Length: 151
Image 1 (cartoon, rainbow, N blue to C red):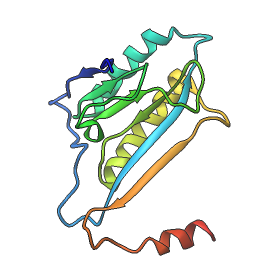
Image 2: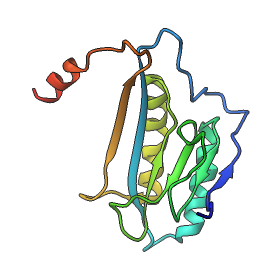
Image 3: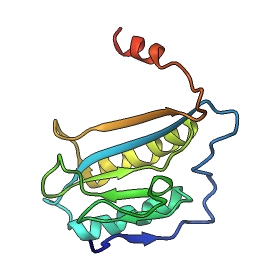
Image 4: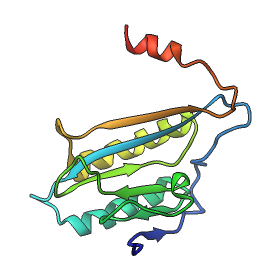
């Protein structure tokens, strides 16, 4: 399979450490932002380049962009990924953030949601998905989160 992923090197001058997981953290987080580029008013390819440039201002991790297939890079879970989403058609994309802390997820929410409003839109086909996992093997019981979701 031909690798169609383009890597954009990290902004090493970024003030925020986007992979700020500490040794005493119990959880690590991820998030996927699905949305459509507003191609009625914007050029798709130009908009992807603008999104990349804006992400580089607030993130110190590499950005993997593949608009044909999913990135295959071994370190993909430690990069931002801009990629297609099989549930979206045409001009739909997904931005996935790297594994990070709870503060890191908040940082990405504060910075990526305005990009979606600026360059695209959401609808009933799009979603915002959070991933929460434990760091240590002995982990933490997820029953509390199941309870919260059911109340």
